Image (cartoon, rainbow, N blue to C red; front, side, top):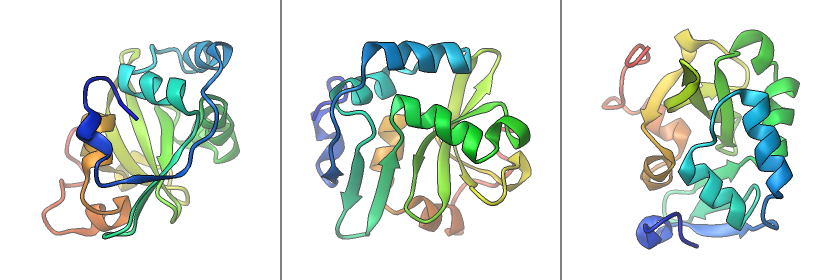
Length: 157
């Protein structure tokens, strides 16, 4: 699987689940619903497989990417629309922590970790700039945000 020209991006992770590609109408609905252009890296992933699960055996890192329609469903079902409306859920880590895009001025600005049980920017932790960096994180999102050298919760607010 290639996310753009970065074939190496998945060298340490494998697919646990690889659904069919996203339908063009689902990608369009995602953009209309969230009011932003879908980031290129996410679009390239979802065009190949809509909502894959990636797993890294050596660190037990799991990324459960949300398909285009699933992202909208999760946004409503978990209450993002009420508690954290300026974000877009991208993936789950298998333990109740979402990786979300932060939306600022009608565009996506970085990826943050937020617990499904604490949808609040004061409880969120900045993870990285883009999808490639999220996939390249060595450890699970939970492990990453609890490491002493991870960015402060208030970084990039």
